[in-house]
Amino acid sequence: MVTEHHPKGWNEIKTNDSWAIFKIMGEFVNGFERMSKIGPCISIFGSARTKPENKYYKLAESIAKNIVESGYGVITGGGPGIMEAGNKGAHLGGGTSVGLNIDLPFEQHDNPYIDSDKSLDFDYFFVRKVMFVKYSQGFVVMPGGFGTLDELFEAITLIQTHKIEKFPIILVGTDFWTGLMDWVKSTLLEKFSNISAKDLDLIHLVDTEDEVINILDAFYKDSSLSPNF
Image (cartoon, rainbow, N blue to C red; front, side, top):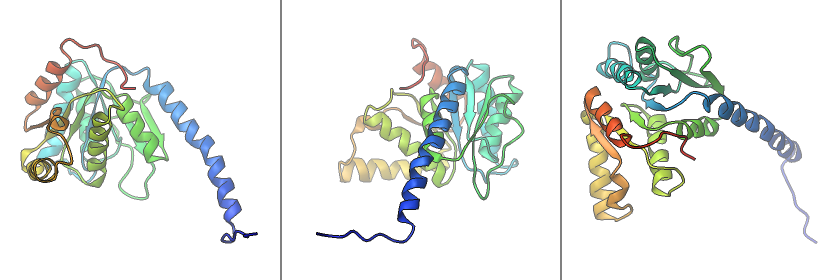
């Protein structure tokens, strides 16, 4: 008979993990209940470290303002930097401004441009990410770091694997994104054939707010907007 040996406190860890399910469920239920009432939105991603004087902060603000004036709401991660710029533009444009905040030991704090009834707080990144994908009809991705890349590639993966409906993914800033997209095409696609050419069909690389709006409007010209799964 083989006796299993576990580190001290192993059973307590298992018990804590089991109880965490209820907290996770609570975050999902609260998120679904509140987000389902908001209406069609576009998510804007980018670095929390981008300062207001940065050209991409100003561009994100302008893009967000144009988005709400075109009839969409704006969703961001609720924090500073590009997220603040997105909420600020939506606020200035008189449109829906949503913030999906995450509890972090650094960087994250609520920005003041989120609608008071549309600020949601999350402890779990994966729950928050579901809300972005489920309730967004497009991703506008500004220059950012690992978190921005994480959101970008998760969306591409879910569309590629048909887990969600297709929606536009718009990369803003050719000076930032061109190197990555060149590598994706030359290495992933052409050299190793690890992706298909059609996987890149919905990814757009632009520099202006007008291009962003034109892409969104063209995609949804004859479509009804709804959650993605």
